[in-house]
Length: 259
Image (cartoon, rainbow, N blue to C red; front, side, top):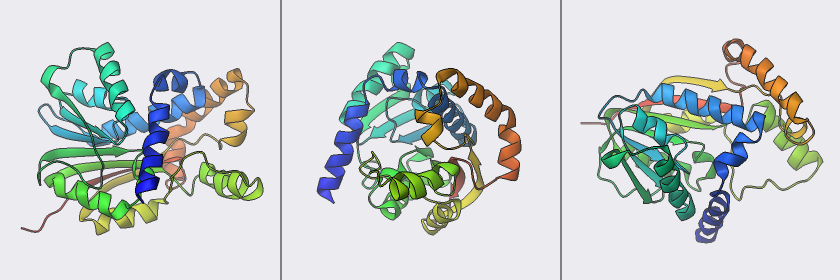
């Protein structure tokens, strides 16, 4: 387990520099990240003065939006290089003074008191965690009773998940690039969230780009742009009719604690 955690740290350390630039250069990946981030922040509903924990904050991609909404945000990431990059990106974005704090940490062992946060965001992180149950229990511990928890994670039952399992890893026999990337279905992750002591308030899936193998690797840039425009036009309709099959699962839940 220790060696796997080191491998995960090194993997994300290697991604830290120029991450935003790489995302912005790929129209489909940019669309996916914008849909994920926009939905997560909307579900989180940050109010001025909220104490918010951003788990796996990376290079401050969501943290800046939380701070802009008036929250006091604590960014935690297992990757030292991501935290270094987050500080740099935050300096470029503006002066946030005492509203933003960073620390290197593990979601399975958070260095915060019980019932400390009003809200917690864990976006595109839980799939890279060795012990998901322990991580969710820790999130539950540091949240105040009635506090909001928003989680996003890739959907095993999406078109992406189908291509990954049956074509990329199955038919082609290719190794997935992440050292640990355990995708869940909507029902699977919902079950784990409920078991950890949360009541699910809202769940949806977003982003219905048709897969990744052709769209990522074979489509010319202009076709990617046109694909994004077409899918974005249909996004709300697809969310309604294909509730459990979008690429990214987004769940908002409320922390319940026995008194």
